[in-house]
Length: 103
Image (cartoon, rainbow, N blue to C red; front, side, top):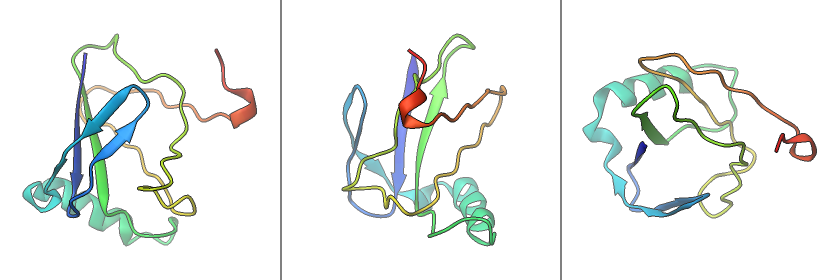
């Protein structure tokens, strides 16, 4: 099972893949995540500003996300960077061209 939290300082619900809607939690209530986003936003290697975070907790090493596109155009600026990081157990992340996603 995966536990998901949408952290954002805007009152915007998040929808993706098989999840109908996630109510936002106030990002500023999570100072560690705010600090991490500030460090990332200080980098010259990203475009745009990271101002929200989809936090996912995997209950075992058998949990994972299936290949997907972050294409929620009403929430995600398609020209902005998306950042992924792992806390706790390591995860392998793979990126694919949309026309070559494994089944």
